[in-house]
Amino acid sequence: MILEEFASDLVRLNGTWAGALVDISKDAHLAEEGRSNDLNVLKIIPGESDVFRVAIRIPLECAEGYWYPAGLHERPLMPDWKGTDTIGIVSSSPLGCLYDGDGRAMLGYATDWLVKDCQLQFGVSEEEMAFVILIQRKRAVAGEPLQLALADRGDTLSRTIAGLRQWQTKRVGKVGRNLPEAAKAPVYSTWYAYSQAIDASLIEADALVARDIGCRAVFIDDGWQKMANGRWYAGCGDWLPDAGKFPDFRAHVARLKALGMSVVVWVAPLLLGNKSDAFSHMAVYAPHHAPRLRANILDVRFREVRDFFVSSCLRVIEDYDLDGLKIDFLNDATVYVGTRGRGDINDVGEAMQQTLEQLCCSLEERGRADAIIEFRQPYVNTAVAAYANVVRAFDCPTDVVVGRRAIIDTRMTSSAVVHSDPLVWDRSGGAQAAARQILAGYFSVPQISMRLTELPSDQRVVINHVLAHWERTRDIVIHGELDGGLPSAGYPVVQCVDGAGNGVIGVYSDTIVDLDCSVFRQLTLLNATTKSKLVLRLSGAPAEVIVDVSDMVGARVRIASHRLDQGFWLVDVPPCGIAVLDIRRVDE
Image (tube, rainbow, N blue to C red; front, side, top):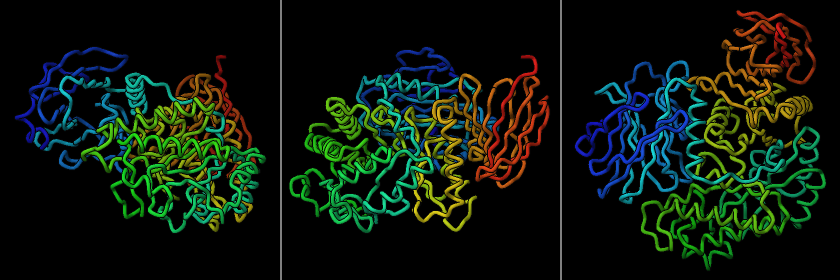
């Protein structure tokens, strides 16, 4: 459909790149082509037409699925009349990968059009049995180049996406924000535990328990601000604490810090409620009303809004001596995309980038360069990632499958530290209910969002045990090389390994786990399944291994030594248990 619909507007470029054909608008032209690491890079110059288009196509062969940043819940081979994505600095990112049944890349692509909005269509051309990606932008500036990178095929999905993201990062030319230790500390979050029904005494009581089970940060979510009731935002805009819930908010923060906790607070600086004091002078800059929020959306294309956004964030941090902000609802800025702007910047993406640049510069000027700034998936665009040091996985309360997918997807698309969606479970579900949630969030910084003073003792023990293992392997899972395995199966086996051979493998379904003994020196093996055995398929040099197995509450099940040769190894690990393997090659 895509190829047929726009055939008269496109012209084929001579040549193929990583097996792909490329068509461009007739009045555009290819200015340069070259190589960058394992990428083929084309520089395409748009012409004068109202809509600029680039189409990429590749034969389907044995394709199994298509990965793209906004495709959190599905990875199907959609027909080309169905697949769509909107690209922009706070919406999605222009990169994707067609992959085969082994999770190997068949067509990986990225562009450097990261800030301004453009549209994607993609899917299977039924007529040609090809996979097609169409990039199009209205009102493209004639002569403004598009850089298109096409990855060599055959590498894993994880490495292909990582390479494309790194190329985009170089194109952006901005180094990410400082990464304080507090950004890598397990979090106690108030959100799912209490929603907006929080107060100082509840948080402080839970924080005592949070510290004892291994958390080192408190994220005070939506509900601290005045008139924060019923999940509505009519009071947003002033960013002052609710005096009934927090009689002295600064003293409350100080008490949390005295427990050894860093403190981060939720804000949504684009929301303007009609009951706020700010409404009287800022409403003129917020013409769009969002009924689902009961608030208006400030338009960042106005300089006055950008200044208000930045000053609000700075004031909240400084007035209450916070360690950072969780900045939410940035994607609502897109309500103004395609509308006529009355501010000093017309493009929403450019205005948002300017807003965030202004915020980061102001933080540095105020001596707050290490402040935690957290954004939320799906705005994981490479251009916006430079302004945050934490990105949180998408909202998916209690859903361990979607939570795991969201974490791995975000890990691949962001250079920032990834936090899990706050983890929540049924208090009556026993130890396993807690264990499966924390194991699902293991390849991120875990956030716990339970009423901790009411938590059963066995669930407290589980959290403490798993977080202790997580702390021991923290640098591996945060900074190690990630391989998510098969995306179509929801990443059933996830692996991280550092340069010294220390690794973590999380097993999330009853499947065979490939283990190359020559790669690892110490391996933490997570049995996040309901089975009591894991099946490992061994390769590499023969090795001796000492296996230390614990169950979900930390009780040692066994410690034993084995000789590992190529073939299959059935390892006894209880459901939601953890095995630590010390591996030594026989020839060493």
